[in-house]
Length: 112
Image (cartoon, rainbow, N blue to C red; front, side, top):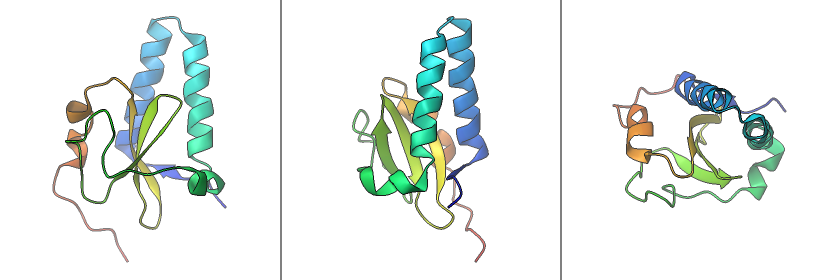
């Protein structure tokens, strides 16, 4: 089964996290980020994950169609419709309202 994909916005968030860790000279954090992403992106691990309607640090960030899970201190927003995609990647203490504004725009229906 192929890896779970990412939306362009989620890929941007990952890039921003990686760049932040590079600027701070934190190679262990970069390694942890990508090990976590490998785990989360493996569809075989989906049954092991617990999903929530909103990330626990910010319950006001309840967005239709997005389910949230946490692993290694990162919160991942998933669109669990087919094809399953990661739509947001947020470090545990980040500003969730700012980091998820791209998800609160009017939804564009997926093609059948």
